[in-house]
Length: 475
Picture 1 (cartoon, one colour):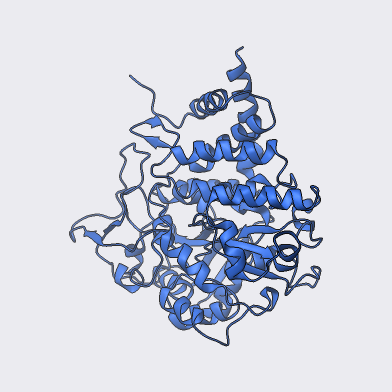
Picture 2: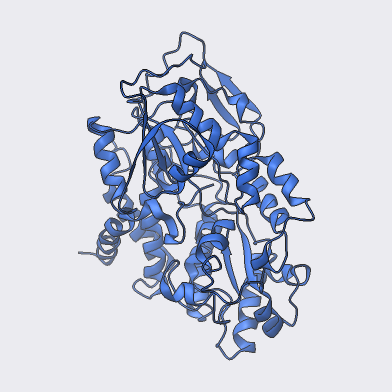
């Protein structure tokens, strides 16, 4: 067996464990990873006689083009279920708690015992129809898997028209909720754009400056990032690191590709991903990180011990990962946020209706109450959520009374809004969840010295993807 094939086999063995936990990206919060782009400028409306229940069966792995959405005729809907209540599935209580707070519909909930079990349970229910939900929650990494299936129906089938949400939504949030034909099937109340969350005390020690306008230049681009990482390492004799782990920044490359993984049924490695491969090798080879895995106990501990300068994350990271809510992290107030070298996002939960939904009016009410109602979204934003509403977030960003105690009174929203407006996820595809896992495994193999060259790492990655069966065999 060739070295490439051996490594490919290793990569595939790692897929099963990674895919099981994919619904809880980064294991750092109750929401999954999510994602952005320019505002939609073209909407294609299908004629009234089009049957929205007839899903496209064409085998294509490419996402709808930028700023292109397809809208069906919004249907008139009613509730027809015998018991008069919605059945809602989720992998945690975050979504159902919001329904209880912001909506007055009658519903039953089935919350999985954990993120690992959720995908399998949901897949079986959607395939068989047995105990299938009317509405279900999902994260960005699994979005296309569900939305490209006939098991999930368009928002238009619930009577929700695009003009109810499109103008005030961030494009990448809507884009994540579309199927391969540009039909919007799911929506989120969250946006979760990212920035650099750095410790001001550590910055003062290693850089000699601490305030955002002074620290921001040290993160202005990836070359400067590396220079700063070396400066931090040298200034502390290796006792303090720029970031906790290489995987903290990998999605900041992934979410800035110019093309998807699969183009014309061929696997493509975007130049920005090759940049990341080299970037990760430098970080590892020069020992510029603490060597942790995102979401691990060691990763979390470094948020409290002044051993790491910065974390790359969203408001979700601050809210759920940093230990401020329960008081376990005594560094609250020492942190601040600056712009990252590239835009990205981390977090977010979407909601969609299944073909088994017989309570369409109530389902539409829930989606409107959670994802469209401006008053409700403003209330969520006031509690520290970055919501999917441009008007709400812009208003909060200019409110002098809005600040984060954990950030020493800073209002970080201008930084996050800039990232949200810059994101473009038009290249996200159905099988990204699995291909991304194969890619990160290949990167790890290269950084750890299991393969010697970039060419070998890429060859192993390509072999692993071929074994996944996501490419249509040539005739």
